[in-house]
Length: 260
Image 1: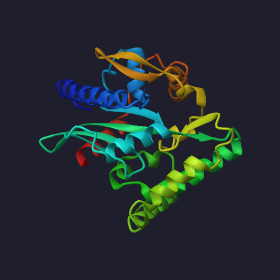
Image 2 (image 1 turned 30 degrees about the vertical axis):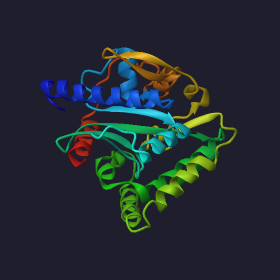
Image 3 (image 1 turned 90 degrees about the horizontal axis):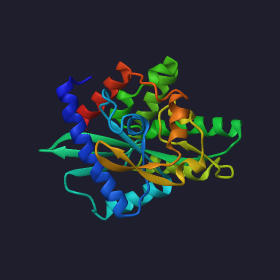
Image 4 (image 1 turned 135 degrees about the vertical axis):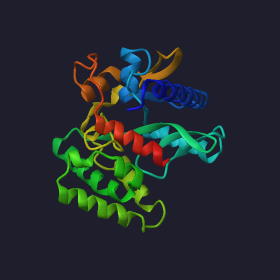
C-alpha cells in the first residue's frame, strides 16, 4: 500500500478524475453510480476510505453504450482516455504521458431469476471472458484464489488464443451473450464484467433505476438510490463496519497502474 503522503496524492488525482467523469456524464445525460469501495466511502466516510487506492463506478449497459458513442466522437479532455476494448473498461488520467489515476467501469446486464439459468450464464460468461482478458488484468487478477490450478491454466491458454482472433471479435461475442441471453424477465441484474466473486452478486433491477448526488470529498457525485442494497449484497449487512482491504487487492491495483 502507498505510504500516507503517497495516498494523499493518489486520492487527489482520483478525485480530479472522478469529477471529470461526473461532468462528462451529467452533461451528456449518462447515468452512473459510484461503486464498490468508492460507494462505500461515500456512504460511510463522505469520501475515500482512508486506505483505498483506487476508484470504481458502475452503469447499466445502455448508459455505457452512450459513453462509447461520446468516446468515438472525441468528447473527452485530452489528458483522459477510456480503454473499452477489454473485459473491464477504465478511465485513465495521464500527466506527462504517465498514468496518474484510473477508474474501472463495471457494467450491469440482466440475468434470469432461475438459479440454474444464473449458473449457466455465469460459466458461459467466465469461458467467453477468457478470450478477451488483457494481460494486465489477467496477471493482476485474484483468479488463483477461486480456481483450481488446471482451470487457471486453461483460462491462461484461452487468453492467449484470444490474442490471435480478429480484433474485437471475442469482445463482441462476450457482449452479445450478456446482453441477449438468459435475461429472464429483466428483473434482476449482475455485473457481467466483474470478477469471479462479484459476478455472483444478483441484484434487483430497481437498484439501478434512480439516481441522486452524494457528497464525496467536498464534491457532489452520482450514486444509485439502491446503492445501499448493492453494498449489503457485496459487503454484508455490516458494511458500515470498517474492514481493511487485503494485500492481494493492493498488489493487483499496483500491477494494473504500473502497466497502464
